[in-house]
Length: 338
Image 1 (cartoon, helix red, strand yellow):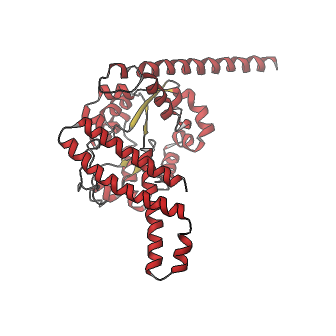
Image 2: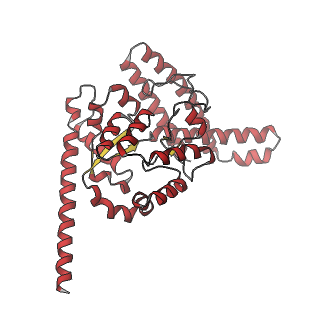
Image 3: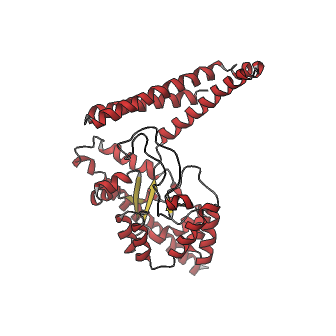
């Protein structure tokens, strides 16, 4: 019994020292990384606001342990080519100081993912098929996406930030790629149209790690930064940041459109009682109408912002974007006040 107590105390001290050393080191390095705002003339973010935003993003997915890692996104931005960073600017890069010491925690908070990562080739392949995503959390592309013939319509707006203009096709961006970033709500097992990419990705997994990363880079699935770091055995976590305001705004507009159209549809088909019952909620009716008016106003503002960007009036374009954000937030608030 005494030997067991000694062993228990030894392991307790070992894990305590490990945790506090990693926690202290990660905080110190994140504070150091945040110093970049003091030397970036184009970034007006306050230092402590940058630190707060760093940890806010890290805690969005606490099970991934990014709050104990170092956010090396500033280093990624500095090393990567400008075009490469602009293309993937909504991804944060994290370097974990814990390494395999975090495995016990992973098995507690994310047992399925941990089991997949530590299982045999057959077990890992079976679980990837059931989850529909690879170790990075990326979905497998459909056959149309792989061949670049996927039809997803055209962009209704323009974005200098993301490099597309009104009328540009949304499809064809994953041509030749076996995986793509998962969209919000895009869950479930591998679909029939994703099986070719799943099979090719599985065979690629049998290759040596440097060759795997070289192929992924050649296909455009990962950038040079990840290809080199993974190839030499430095594993980085990548976290995709979906614009929260844009997502909430689109949801608000969709709900408002469905509500107003439902009333008009019932009136059109002579269902007066149903239409009257649906429109009894005067607050919801008023808010939905206002949201749709804001949406029309935002569409006009986006055209104006594009014209300002093309004219090289970046300051005015930025103010124009702020007006769009204000109206989007107003629409979201109206939707939530029902």
